[in-house]
Every structure is written in structure tokens, then in C-alpha cells.
Image (tube, rainbow, N blue to C red; front, side, top):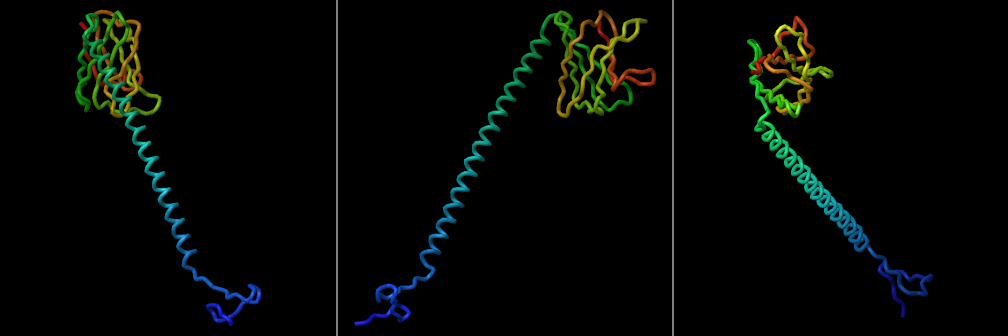
Length: 186
């Protein structure tokens, strides 16, 4: 008895057995399954990386928050110290900036210049804090560089003598340059 294959032919190379020709069904299903598995693995890896990134970001924010809280606590202790003097600096007429404060502790030789919305100056130019005492030449106490969003600028100086006037200039002091802030230490 003779049998024919799906195309109705016998295959002599196959020992007379019918040759079955398969359509693209299973191979196409396997290719689609592999592609789907690849997309699933890629999506899972993306989610893992995204979650890890969010955890790292949360850790950085927590550390930053802790650092800021510590700095605020330090400033609070500094301001409450018995040797700390507070000097309120008023903006000179025509200046758009609000008032500022200098907190100076003579025993620690440290100070803070506190000012909200201090405009950032050109690179290489900072705000200079000057001490003026009677007829003596002005003494540069410190230079602070404004940063966007910052309002607390620590500085260190060797001496701010007794009763005097404090002035802050934007950039180096000169006869033609008007200070932007001024105040008196009693």
C-alpha cells in the first residue's frame, strides 16, 4: 500500500515514508514567546533599577535633611552663646535687597552673615564684609560667595574690634562703590 505525504508525494530519501511539511505555526509561536519573555525581563530590570534609584535618592535626601538640621542646631547654639553679638544690617537707600544680620562670636572668632535672596555675583567676585573703626582704615573681615537658595554664610575672622561700623559691599571696596548693607556694633 502506498501513502502520500501532505502534498501527496512519497519521499524516496526518507525510506518511502511520507514527508510532512509543517507550517510556520510552532516556530512563530516560539519566536513570539521568546520576544515576550525578553520584554518582560527588560521591564522587570527597569523596575528594579528605578526602585533602587528611588531608594538611593531617598537616602541622599534624608542625609541632606539631617545635615541641614544639624547646621540649624549649630547656628541656634551659636546665636544663643553669651559671647555672640548680633548686628542688624540695613540696606542702604535704593538697594532692592532686604535687611541682613551678622552674628559674631569674638571668643570663637566665627561669624555668620545671614541674608535672604542675596543675588549671585559674577565668578570670582563675592560680597565683602568690612569693619570701620573711627578714623582707621577699613579692615576686610571676610568674603562670602552667594549661592542660589542659600541664606546662611559662615565666615571666620581674627578680630572685629569693639564699637565700630560694619559695611557689606558687592565686590571689592572702593571710594566709588556704595555699600549695600551697613550697621553698627555696640
